[in-house]
Amino acid sequence: MKILVAIKRVVDFNVKIRVKPDRSGVDVADAKMSMNPFDEIAVEEAVRLKEAGTASEIVVVSCGVAQCQEVLRTALALGADRAILVQSDEELQPLAVAKLLKALVDRERPQLVILGKQAIDDDSNQTGQMLAALAGMPQATFASKLDIADGRATVVREVDGGLETIAVTLPAVVTTDLRLNEPRYVKLPNIMKAKSKPLAVFSTAELGVDVAPRLETISVSEPARRSAGVRLPDVKTLVEKLKLEAKVL
Amino acid sequence: MAILVLAEHDNRTLHPATLNAVAAAQRIGGDVHLLVAGHGAGAVAGAAARVSGVARVLHADAPQLADALAENLAAQVLAVAGRYGHILAPATATGKNVLPRVAATLDVAQISEIVAVLDADTFQRPIYAGNALATVRSADAVKVATVRMTAFDPVAPEGGHASVESIPAAADAGLSRFVSRETTRLERPELTSARIVVSGGRGLGSGGNFAELLEPLADKLGAALGASRAAVDAGYVPNDYQIGQTGKIVAPQLYIAVGISGAIQHLAGMKDAKVIVAINKDPEAPIFSVADYGLVGDLFTLVPELVAALG
Ligand SMILES: Cc1cc2nc3c(=O)[nH]c(=O)nc-3n(C[C@H](O)[C@H](O)[C@H](O)COP(=O)(O)OP(=O)(O)OC[C@H]3O[C@@H](n4cnc5c(N)ncnc54)[C@H](O)[C@@H]3O)c2cc1C
Ligand SMILES: Nc1ncnc2c1ncn2[C@@H]1O[C@H](COP(=O)(O)O)[C@@H](O)[C@H]1O
View (cartoon, rainbow over the protein chains, first blue to last red):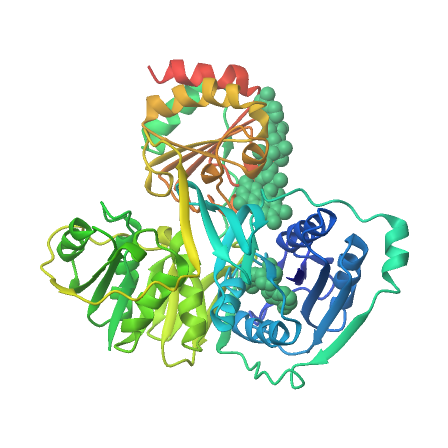
């Protein structure tokens, strides 16, 4: 079974971003960039499926600027077999990424596509669902457990009321939630080995996808800031404040 | 053109998140229709028809719609999509699961978690864990969006007199099957609509401590219980307690954070609470930078004291 994993290069989760003074966007010029954390979980799950003998090949894909090669190399060092960069300097919105991934699904014919549930920069939580729709595949989003057997994926999903289990026929799209697994760290020797693994580069035109953005960003502003309040000496004062000042009790 | 809102429900009751989504639809302007897709969900359709400001309810009822499977529910929305210029759903697990599928099939963008409607084409949405607000305009023929519940005051659940139209159910796509559900028992108010939320983090140290310390406090206050990701990952509480960028978004009147450091991913889910209280032994914890009232000290003594002081 071949698995395709989509990984996005994003501003590291530890970075506190700043809005540009002219409100044109978020200043990420010098920010540390990393693999989207949910995509690390996606890569880890694929590697575990390969280690278990369920998967035979792992192909990782990233869409974006040339530097996305870095996250692809990381994924190769974690155990992916080959990488594809869909290189573009344009803004790629989820629908465009889903179309690019659909074009690659048509070429690669994977039995399983794993994505993160959400990119922590745009917080869209869409791409996997969109890809599933375009590829005519079932989807199992927000996965916290994945079992593959008999041409089906049985997936425990994190939903609002707790957990839900569904079974989907393969090929299918799965998106990862935080509790699916705990990703391993990259080992230094594997980083060296990953350098010789194949990495193919496509343009969006080669894949025949129109990636023009559908949403125009008019401005990006800073949300209303909360200011720090007061430190209270004891519980008694807190209860008084909540009753008399804040009037929430 | 009319606006379609996908109703959130469990085949028995209409989920209040629907009322927030209807409120967002009203901001856009135009007749608001609610789609109730389910199985044996007649009572939900009835409740939907009484929601203030709803002009029409579309009701599709069939076994394949019982469990909100994405493939079947998306097909149901798509079956009526042609009549609408806007399609909205509350940003619940179901809404987030289904609407992108609808949007992609229509070849339009989806706008996630809108927090403001500026006009029929222009919306505001948070990005980067709520550290920035993007104003985006859609050029697509149909606007598909999920609605962040906390950003829109709900419309009244009663007072409307919508007509209920039965519509044919979309066929079973046959791609997915519901197996089982493990729901967290809810003896408390629901997290996303609770007036008071008591929330615990890694500082609690164990599931036993979490229950022993925070349940009495929540009981006293009639509060919902929430948690940080660290508390969920450590298994203190079920996954659906998680508040934050990638969990639930809450905006209660009062949020009490106990043993939570205040990582940006956590703040993303609760910083719109009216009043925030933090209890933490580390005076440098970032949670204090957003807290209206802070108590620096050991939660194992402060929380029982607080329970006692509440009488
Ligand atoms: C992709 C991604 C998504 C994430 N999504 C979320 C999310 O949705 N929600 C979320 O919450 N987090 C999320 N996180 C995790 C987040 O970054 C933090 O790791 C997490 O919020 C920390 O939880 P915590 O505050 O409980 O734990 P810690 O940061 O370990 O803080 C524990 C606190 O308890 C205090 N404490 C300890 N003992 C006591 C005591 N006896 N008395 C008083 N105080 C005490 C400590 O001083 C400390 O401040 C996400 C992270 C990533 C990478
Ligand atoms: N530019 C991209 N390149 C590769 N994968 C992506 C890209 N954008 C999004 N994805 C995948 O889609 C998931 C969800 O992203 P989003 O819908 O933007 O929140 C991510 O976790 C990735 O797995």
